Image 1: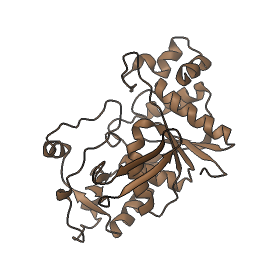
Image 2 (image 1 turned 180 degrees about the vertical axis):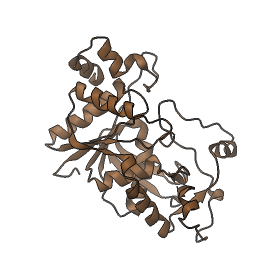
Image 3 (image 1 turned 90 degrees about the horizontal axis):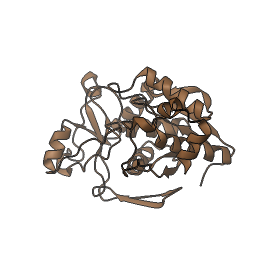
Image 4 (image 1 turned 90 degrees about the vertical axis):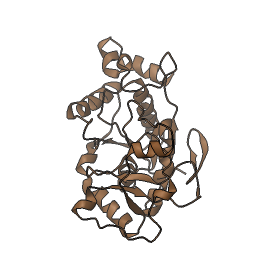
Amino acid sequence: MLSSVYLGRLAPSPTGRLHLGHARTFLLAAERAHALGGRLLMRMDDLDGTRCKPELAAAALEDLAWLGLCWEEPVVVQSARLDWYRAALTRLHAEGMIFPCHRSRRDLAEALSAPHEAQPGIAAEQWDEPLYPPDWRPAAGAPVPPLDAAGWATNWRFRVPDGQTIVFTDGHFGAQTATTGRDFGDFLIWRKDGFPSYQLSCAVDDAALGITEVVRGADLIRSTFRQLLLLKALEASIPAYYHAPLMNDENGVRLAKRHDALALATLRARGFTPAAVRAMATN
């Protein structure tokens, strides 16, 4: 059930120019907030230090304002909220819910005898990471290294409960079910570069900001199961979820930030009006 006081959010990641698929999702988020008489926040997901750029953050705000979207000020910037994420990690650490991981993606791919490459246009934390081998996790109750200087520069994974079935009802796709240890395993929540993963930062912010419904692309449904576990572990309120269908190009390939021809800036330069782009995004 949606809260009687609706609060949604737009959460672009400034790693490239926004495209028509982003427009579809953000327009849907704005539409749902408006229909329910609610409010809409803007959150800039700028924690990928190697790919996020200030000029792309500014461009995202410009593109969305041109499209006709409105949001409350000030803009929430994730890179300014590290204390929140550190506090969450400290709590999970104290509860023994996490463990340090020194395995690389290559280790994981080789262990599974199958390559798992990041999907173009998606932050590394957001692609569906392969199932973490359960025999790699420390034994339950094993001592956990401290969160000292070395600890903050360590990869940390959340220890998922074994064989737990997680269910939520998506506003668009209906009932969604996943089982821990089968559909996903222990997942990354903190990176050795000193930043939280997408899963942790998103869960912490949605709870701390009081978001009542998360509207995002269908490629993040699997992330929702992980974030539900984190929200429960942190004893935080759980929002409703609405995952929008993804948009493909003329070849049936899902749109990514490499699709410059369908970038909002490109469409603007070609003379498309905001109304025309909104129609393209919503058809």
